[in-house]
Amino acid sequence: MRARPEGVGEGDVSLALAEGWRIDAAAMRYAAVGGGSYHWAVRDGAGRQWFVTVDDLDDKAWLGDSRPAVMAGLRSRMETALALRRDAGLEYVLAPVPGCGGETVRPVGPRHAVAVFPFLAGTPGRWGEARPASERAVLIDMLAALHQSAPAGPPVAAIGLARREDLNAALRNLGQPWRAGPFAEPARVLLAGAADQIRYLLEIFDRLAGAVRASEFVVTHGEPHPGNVMRVGSRRMLIDWDMVGLGPPERDLWMVVSETGEESRRYADLTGRSVDPAGLAMYRLRWILDDISAFVNRLRIEHRRTADTEHAWLALKETVAGAAQLRPDSVE
Image 1: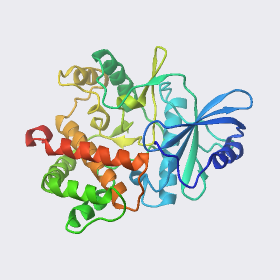
Image 2: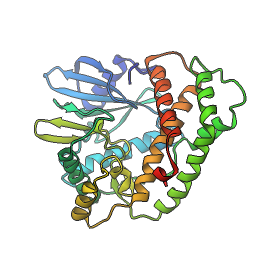
Image 3: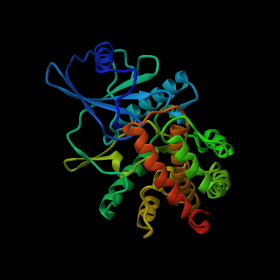
Image 4: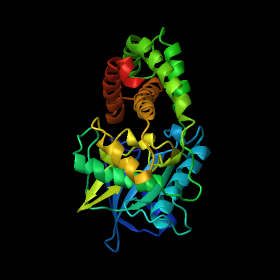
């Protein structure tokens, strides 16, 4: 996130760290990296380093429809990540550091939650970058181990779009100007020009999702894209576990397998499960539609021009352009 969270300052974060983890923050540096969470690099009085995340409970629709539900969903996912590392022995899982009372997440103010992670001196990949075959093979091995793990009580990852009703509402209200902020009306015009294609893609998604619901579920990460794989020396760490949950293996695999089929064969050899092309297509389409839903919702509600809303507008234009070029045979 490029802009800092509204209503939460470094003093609030420092107090939460002291009360929840007994971390005395001697220095804090805001890290404008990633998307979906706010981050700080923290050094305590003993010189130890920590990576601290703050999540907006109003901006995690896939976790619940209220702040208490989102907090509970975030906590269950952080506990799952901790169990995967501590109990299942998956050392590549970057799990949160439990607090003094064992909690993985604590509230900071009425709208936000804070979690603490080990600080890794490594280099993450970048979203959209091409991965060589060797990197894809390493990630397939990691995902195969994850999919065969059995931590206690992992949450189920919803197959449907988290903001489906918001997108439906936007598509129904294209005839009147949107006046919620500087990018609202441009977003309406853009969406209106692609509305027929988006409605068509939603129909395809619903058909594919119906078949996927009958699939065997495993523990999945949810978004193992290059930005969530960190290189730490010769090791690879899988970070950002707030979407972990039970789902079909294709929920992860669509981001990794190539057209060569090499990764699918490797995965089948490791797990005994064949990769479902229809599941890959469904999750590929789901990602596009979910992004459109999220960006449209961000720009339909009251907003100002900030680095984050500018990013949402540019990302919406790019995603809608990509959706307009999808052919039926590429998503069915």
